[in-house]
Length: 285
Ligand code: 9MG
Image (cartoon, rainbow, N blue to C red; front, side, top):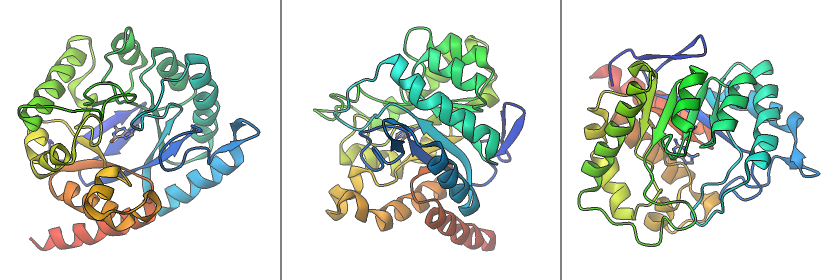
């Protein structure tokens, strides 16, 4: 990543010269960690979400990632209308009332447009704008985009992931998607990349990506990573999803040391402390 990179998020700068935190807000009934938490009588509970957003911002989140489709392994796709109903009121409520930038976690062109109109300032697409119409719609919003690598689709991606060289293949895919965005008119400085930990990857693939993250960083785009509470931690520690804090923090630290610029996490306060410790030690070097 270029040192001192600042991403223009709908007129507000996101300074990625040091690692920053993206807090997770899943407006889904079935996400692996916080599924169903933000619903009341079948609708997003906006008051509870505002309180949680304020708490995440106070704890150090620079960005809040709002998503209406679970992408955990085995998850079924969600209908466009349902996704719009889950996401747009939340983006609107948080964009008006909270200090963080609001990112929309979606692959759906209609959701990009509606979320941008409601005040979102970043698009986070786990399918890297490969759905029909997604690239054009995302570019038309003028928002920065995060392009994530995924092999397959959530309903089947963990069945038998295969690569000859996972780091080379993820790098080549990421570079090609970034160039497609640039060709479609998105400024290069408005692109983030994400290797997609846990998305069509075995433990060995995830560990290779983490240990060679600097090779993906060398493509020249800020890196977003999502490792928080993921099952790769269970494969190492044997822990259930609500017991993966220590594993999540260790991975956050390792990713930040290897160049991750934005960490997508559930445990914002603990991750902020971890990054602060890292920063103080790095300043001694
Ligand atoms: C939505 N979502 C779930 N996991 C993710 C990850 O690892 N990266 C990004 N960009 N989005 C994610």
